[in-house]
Image 1 (cartoon, rainbow, N blue to C red):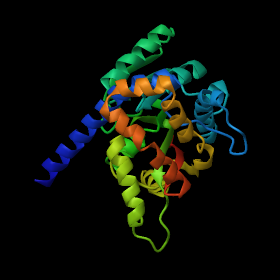
Image 2: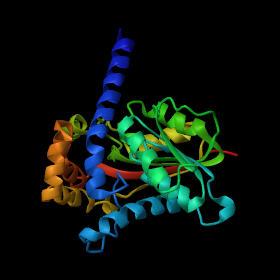
Image 3: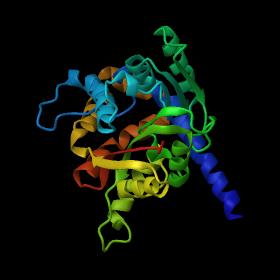
Length: 298
């Protein structure tokens, strides 16, 4: 009985994620462009409105740098999977940067279709392709990709162990795995769980963004280490993304943003209304923006 129920819950979660991004992706593209993820900012700098799209590119480049992917052509990835690809912004950027072949997967048919159109429009149809698929059951053989890329999709995964196992499975020997995701804070030595008010805050965000239960950065590290992956390392980049959600709120409440928001439907509006909770979560240290990287043994 419980397994049937859990399968039903997982299906409902997947359907909710797909519908949320089917409805909201057009709004996001209108206001912010190709990239449906945080930007990377210098905490000491003053951020202007014109800096946000370049900051999203910096997020990609900083993630590559952190993972040790250099500009040495001999060490650059030639095959890449973008797990939770959105409308393919990261894939197209990486395909150009490395001359690589990228395959992206998403639960949203609208995103997959739009990503393929954009790849074709930009002359990248032979390098970047996109399809609807489940990140927990990826439609790829073992050991296929030099770079396994997950930019802000891990928070949607209901079974983190299964998610990490799939990332490791499709990575080629010697390949790099990069996970950039929202986490909750690491628990202290004497803590068994988050405090009730912290759980309540995260649950309100989960309801709006179709997220399962959150995990910590250290949970990811332990999962990767349990698979004997090498060079596992993690960092808290929360201070580097601090300007992001206030900027999203400001962009949503321009006239153009407001009209687009109304057209996007109730799920998107519900998501917009909890944006201040993301800011609160970061400021109170409950939410962490984490990068976790590792390498599959040769």
